[in-house]
Length: 196
Image (tube, rainbow, N blue to C red; front, side, top):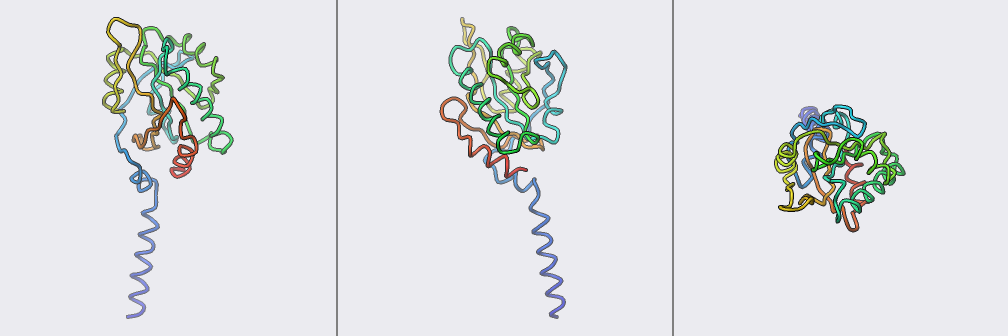
């Protein structure tokens, strides 16, 4: 009888260890939205898919446009700070940064290159996307990131999220963080470490 209990206890212990995988870790996050596919062109003019950037990587994404006269500049500066902090934490090989333009008509690869260079973006793990239609990116933002993306009537400005979005290796949106004023850098790094 004692041996039977030991076998049962060992089985329960093994099951609890098996349940400690990334899937269960992802379940502890406040969001769980499956990200759809996005085919795009990066700052080099290369065709890429978001799923390829997300392969074996945790993604930190944001939505920007280069003519933005309010929030995009501080967001991009803060993303650059986060990229440096993640390097300092030794996590750069695990994280892919993705800045998604919501103004593909104006934001050509050359425009995105010029914009990103002003912020000293390190392209080794930071990609800027364009090359789809405005309808496609608005629908993608609405459905996959549960966030608005729309042109302001009679203006060259757009309504869009000011968050940094955390996407797990499974391609699931897990969390979002303030991206403009006082982003929670330490919280983001802890969440990335949790997923690692």
